[in-house]
Image (cartoon, rainbow, N blue to C red):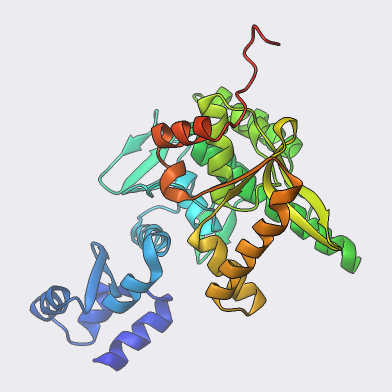
Length: 334
């Protein structure tokens, strides 16, 4: 039986179609038994995944499987969009993925929804891409669709991520002397927005694009900036350089007027640093504390926070007030 599953997984890149189980001689009773024991998990009607794989891929991977299974089950060749395209593009999401899948259908009158599929009326993207066998909107179009229909936080986080990655890609291309695709920038996103002309959410998308900053190195830093904006605090400078003792350091946030450093602490931030440097996570945390000891004498104050605090607007507001983070000037002050 294990060989049957492994063959199905290989043929469908992790997904197991019900027809393949039937072809192997398994009846519905056998499948139900596997589901009850947790050896199989139903992604959606007609599509399964092995239980251990379902557990290890996390929420992002599970939603990608749902999108792929829905596309494979669809009777029409749709172009998948919004959060569904974002998931396949590997964009970060703060919050939960939707329970259903999203696609663009220019023939839909005002959009339509079923239990697992929501279709949006709108212009078809002329430059779709194929990811894992699914036709999805381009990266730029995906950012516009998400920013126009989601919260400020979700839109900014995804745009920050893409701008950051695009800046890194262009820097690498410049070092190697290679020529790649033109980068996605604020200007190209605004051009994309003008081309799409969403019926709703145009201002929301425009605001997210204007606020986005590729200097935000991870979703946690994007979350902090969005909270500063929403709670009425001054937006700090990002990735400011400090040269101390012959070494160079960059900080997440710097309020120059009060000489305050702010740092986002997150488990993912530390584990990524450990993996990239080939170091133990404990050593990465120790090094970070040593870094703080070096930087503290250079400023008036140094504060840290993590996901739990920043995800709670009320708690984060109290924290920022207690720590003396400067308030943004009001219209009367300007």
